[in-house]
Amino acid sequence: MRDEEAYSLLPPYLLDTEGAQPETGATQRTYGTLSYNQRRRCWVVRGDPSVTEWCKRLFPGSQTSRRGEARFTAHRRIVGELNWLMLRYPLTVRECDRERWDEALAQAREYVVRREQALRLPPRQEPDPTVFSGRLTPFQQEGLAFLMRSDRCLLADEMGLGKTVQALAMLATAGAYPALVIAPPHLMRNWENEIARFVHHADATPLRVHVLRGLKPYALPPADIYLAHYLILRGWKEALPQAAIPTVIFDEIQELRHAGTEKYSAASLLAHAASRVAGLSGTPIYNRGAEIWNVINILDYHFLGDYESFTREWCYGYGNQIVAKPELLGEHLRREGIMLRRTKREVLSELPPKRRLVMAVDSDDNVYRRLMEPLRQILGRMGEPETTASQRALWEMEIERGERQATGVAKAPYVAQFVRALLDAGEKVLLFAHHHEVMDIYQRELKAYSPAFLTGRETPAKKDRSVERFMAGRTDLCCISLRAASGLNLQRASCVVFGELDWSPAVHSQAEDRAHRMGQTDSLLCYYLVSQGGSDQDIQDALGLKVSQFVGLMGDEPQSGDDALQSAQDARRYVERLVARLVAQAASAEAPR
Image 1 (cartoon, rainbow, N blue to C red):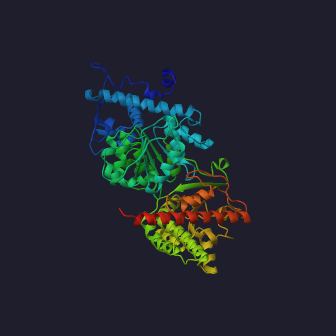
Image 2: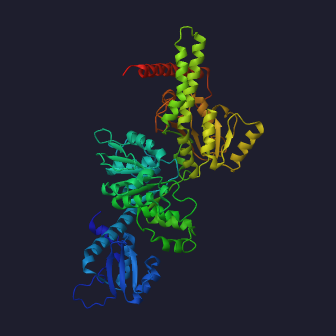
Image 3: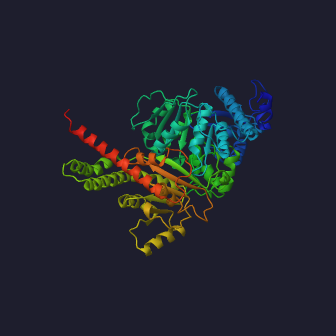
């Protein structure tokens, strides 16, 4: 857009600055001085009490305990309002701050122009296909356009609408590298997989990704994207801002809804040092509406003014954390161009009735090895000469069951962590698993959510009570055995999570259909959580699932005899590979060093 066109978008209070900065020797009356406070990052007005009184009346956040003094946060939007005030009450800008004021005013004009231009831009944008692999839905194209035109913003789409993909499309299309992604620990591996799948250089070579390890800072190697989780931020508090990484993405930014922690302080310093900052969250506000101030303050310092004036004006009084009119605050954030939020219900026409997403989760290698030790003893007996074919078959079945159980138990705490995030986001979850030992871990890890259980161990009366509790809304979590799902009607669920996998696609489809039934008015999201070790990879390959990829309908027809035979053959081949692997590991352990 040409300069004159951009100039035409400015409101009058940002056009005329004649009275704001009188030239040396000018006779125009001034009402005080304007100076910059570096420590507080604010502009300070000192002058006639009549002027500072007007400041405090019009701008609640400018109040101080000192007579004849008012403070204005050095935010682009607030600088524009201060300039408007100076048209009526001209102030003398302190000579040492004149250049800073000119720069602040230029940024205020640019901010307003970009906001007005955004209203005139096409609402959707296609990602650059030379650096981004994948297709965005129309609403995701709108999200990309929003992220491209907003250098500090919050993408607050409801969970399951692809915020990660939209953020990666922005990084690729804008070439906003190097970038730093901060995410919860249980989503780190998913970011690695999504980056590998969706973004690359124009010559098709993969991006360089480095995962930060530990609390002790070290020299960062060259990379296009750095990944870190919130738990290590405090250790990198001083180092990361000095790394001068221009783009920062805070995934699940509600992790920063509580101020006063080292994690929050580190995130604030990091965001201040970056030129582009984006937050992703389906639930930026939890119990207290004022938590949104903490979140927005990370993205754009004092966008909502200082905390005291925010609680006084937006909440039920000074220090109160309940927003009086949340819909009015939401509209303000959207109108100012800092937040975009869509719900599944709003974009339902663009979503398939049932969506499947395979996501990687961590597992505990030590737990896995401990549980696998008894199987090595069975392996030793299988090699004895007197072993019969029937004994060998039984032992192979025991080994297969044992490793599936070891896989499920080793990743169960991480599955619970993933489900906890869904529940905190307001989702209604069906969590499927196979082994009782895995269910026991879910019961312990998710106790605070008072889950219902349908594992085959309950009496008919307890089973009915579990179904009734979930459908009546007395709990939002129901844990169900994969092979005990037949005949249940649980269409209140919005998410289905598979903490363990089965060899048969039809078993998964039947489990999904506990929620995907008549009466289900939402698009159902089905998560398949897989770990890198154990049996998951083989079962995943047999099912034809690709990590972090929406897949087509899978096993949606009743299981035929051929399907059952294919599942049995897959399991058999897996056991043969497993036995061979264990034999090789045993031989390696016994070999002299």
